Image 1 (cartoon, rainbow over the protein chains, first blue to last red):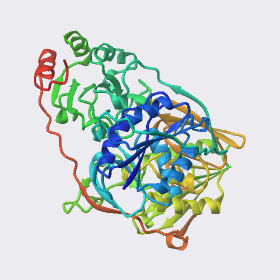
Image 2: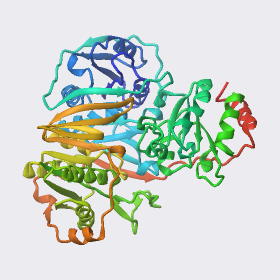
Image 3: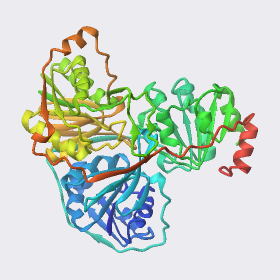
Length: 308
Length: 250
């Protein structure tokens, strides 16, 4: 078994998903290489080399990979795939974008969003928004897998794996990057945060999300939202936690003014501790919360901030 | 321009699915089925492009058993012009679906294919990207904005850190995210009219596509249930428990 992991990064920083994928890969075999595809991404490669269990880091450092466009990256990974039994990428918007293209180019299935490895060919994944858990077995020679990183612990950082540059340039005329509008925040990213505080429709408007800031500051938390809050236009979609947003599993998840639609629970029910604050004591969120507090969030949030 | 919109018949999003007692699969007997919500957004986007005078024809395609024609008719009632039903009783994977759709792309030569980013049953999020690879087209996945320009389409994509805009040369593949639009409801006169719109049925096994899947479903289980339900009286009790009992805050 030889495994290639696609490193999640933004050319400057290696994201936390990658060490978790290495841990998942260790359940498949011991020959583990990490591919860093980007531009001027040497620091990312050095960071990847520190992950325990990594044999080698391959770096495709070229301007054509600056924005990790699916068309270029899929061609690159597809060419490298011949040497591997498994290719893993995080089930982020990057991995979800290019990996099915890799699978199709190599004429194999993709298994999406795995949450456990049963054996080298058998994997566990949620379906129906996590309301059912499927175990599937692939007979393809090459397994193309996207991995729900939050379902795996991170591998340690005590390695010094060799870094090798690969000189493969895959450009395309089909698609080009125009621009990106990235949310600038001092807070941790949702998928990497130990603590998350999320607001729902009960927040009533976007301005009231400021009530979460002080608590988030004190806890070092990321701020999320339910789909209802996003659909109502309170906050941008990249804050959405749920089946159609981000899947998170922090140590502490505080749901404020969130009723607990299946859609939202699918994105956060694997959190270690869940706190629910809602004025409706019948809200379904309380059924899965470790600590439920019934009351008006506009009274409770200032009190909570003061108490921390 | 011609737009192709594949739609999937899937469990209605309001229905909570149950797992069969023998763990062989989920139980879909007598369950309400609908167009997958993301596919509905794809249909709506195509209709808006037609209303804006950009698109001239919208072709709806669905793959599956005979009952899929219901979803094709729904899409035609919303504003599709004609339908193609690729008939099969097999449970296909995304790769086989993408290969069948590719045969339609070759035959119909659409300028744009708009699909939902994922189906709410299998949650795979694969078909659009696979179709783009097989058709050697550029892809704009998870779209929140689609602007057609001359021989190009600009797609604004929902990505983890915010938004990204890409330009694709036509023909191209777009997959829809939630905020792209809010689908309309079909009016009764349009539902009646849709019954007279043409729907062509093609047998999937006549299309020279290998339909066997390489992925076997071993079992389906219910997710582990969280044991929650405990309440605290006030903020002080909450903070005390988080500190001393759960030990998740300092």
